Length: 275
Ligand code: NAP
Image (cartoon, rainbow, N blue to C red; front, top):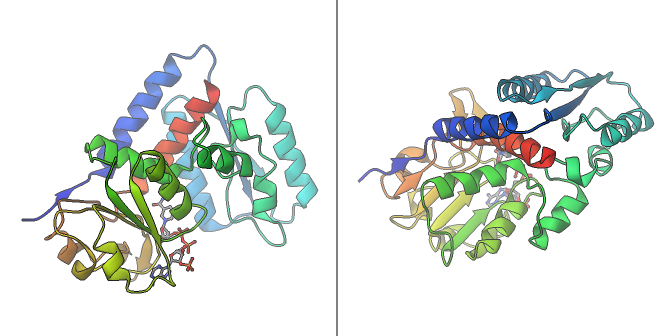
């Protein structure tokens, strides 16, 4: 039997509607300061989507654009100014930044309480210690998809393929805090299929089209495909969707699965930061 598809577009729309209600209930309008340095076309598209969606839920658009030849000190000074500005609830530095700027060093300057991407060392520390804080948007979005489909996380065998700071590590940590038994697989994992076949919840965040085949999944598993690979044929994930969906119980499509959740969770984080 074919798996049920997880409709990330619909769930993201629900999250945005909830954020809009939360924003309307606040006494003071939250503001999101997106920072774009330079004119990378892909970054311009992403920033544009973030700005449009935040305005649509009632978050003030406090976008700042700096020229590509900005120095570290210029970007740092802008971040310092935004950290102090009470109208700014959240700050997002669009990555990558143009060379020779160091995106990680600049991100670290964002106040943890305004760190709506959840990427500063303090946010990472709060996540690891399971303290309240702002969580990275894509892993938070994946947890939201699982919860809204009532997937049992506690006690489940969860396998995350990929160990990036942006997704794999925080996703694994969030599943651990929800009492899953978590395995992180990566490029040096021996016999990947034997590891992923253990998973009740299998999450692929690799960047290799179709890496996860029918041979990699346990019948009835829940499969979340984070991969976004642009091929001539269009956008595809890390999961060989057509064969895997015949075996598993629940699966995300690409596009329309995890993708739409990232910005929705950014808005949720901005509301949380404002509160
Ligand atoms: P990344 O930093 O490139 O990390 C990729 C991970 O995959 C690494 O840990 C790497 O292992 C592992 N890997 C590579 N080849 C492998 C293989 N053959 N078998 C097992 N593991 C392998 O990537 P990322 O930033 O986490 O992104 C991963 C994918 O998710 C990309 O397609 C990206 O576009 C997508 N993504 C989507 C969203 C979204 O939907 N909004 C957000 C973030 C990422 P090593 O550590 O050993 O090198």
